[in-house]
Image (cartoon, rainbow, N blue to C red):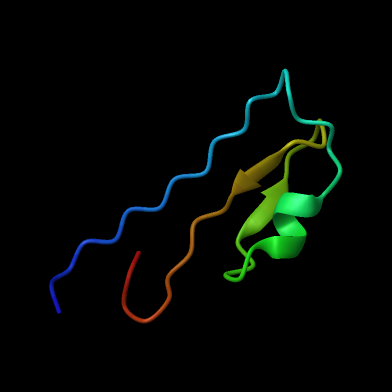
Length: 50
């Protein structure tokens, strides 16, 4: 307990082709898409972590 978990997901929009592969392989299912179709990591709480 008390362990800080940092997860970061940042998209390089110049390289992203909006194919959805990142979302398909995300085991936490926390990737959503913005209005332009680019993926982002939504906020989540799992097993007591935020």
